[in-house]
Length: 112
Image: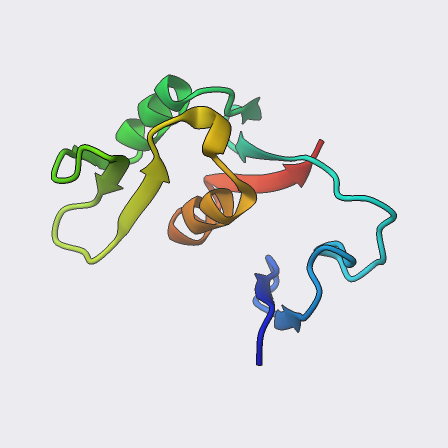
């Protein structure tokens, strides 16, 4: 079984086997749309790592400096670790969804 597991706000989970051809709401899409990460409390689109770091720190995340090749954040006394590429231009939707899963009701991914 391959594909992308999609988690909806109502708790329903489903497998999208061809994520390039299907949007997250289950509709077919003509072309891939650009995704953006949005901080829900401020409705702010995350446009840089400095903005993201500020938001994560305000929600209890700490910067983790163990690996210099990545930007990493963790929460004390948990197994949660967010690992991101060093360059923001390599920040992809899979990284955004990782942040959303670990920060429900704080971040969401939207189509631009």
